[in-house]
Length: 248
Picture 1 (cartoon, rainbow, N blue to C red):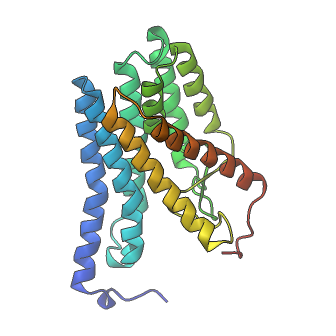
Picture 2: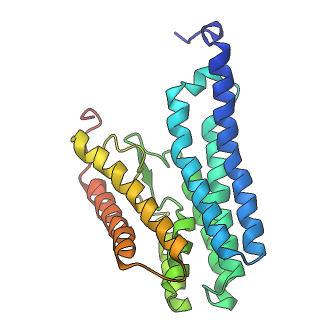
Picture 3: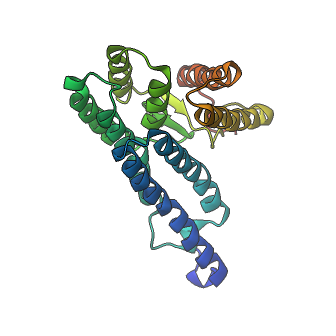
């Protein structure tokens, strides 16, 4: 039976609206990142992209904690989240690729258009987030991709190959780990918690690299890239060896 609206307190309503406002603030951060890119303030743009990731990482936790669908039933939180994520994970980094010289100049627009189309497909699949809490297809982590391409300073054609390859992977039904919801990652609570901690450490290491730029630190590089490799390996493994839905 659907819970009555009268069972929701005013405080729950207010907290629910605040959480939706917090999610929406991610789009405000996104427009600030676009302005920073336009002004060629690339490091500032990365800090803003990082802030958007933090907002996206914690707003769902807050929403589930207050049962936000019941607290604010007139707002579709999942739709709001997808709109904000499409701005921050696709449009902002796509604009970054256009403004910088990371890609071959004559092919940059083609690559960016391909990114946008592949991301539109990935975001709008009915099961883009699977029933066992994975992302299906490359989950449009384009803000993270442009961060690594910017710092690695590889040849533009190598960058082009990476971008096109990842865009194609959006159409391949590989399941990628949803870092904040490792419910069906493993039956071990310890390993699930370890994955969350590893994700936080990756964020700290990556922020450290950003803080030190243009200098670097081998330990932080190893930690950041090590997590990325681990993430890919686990995602591929769980694609072919999934846990039963009843095991959590």
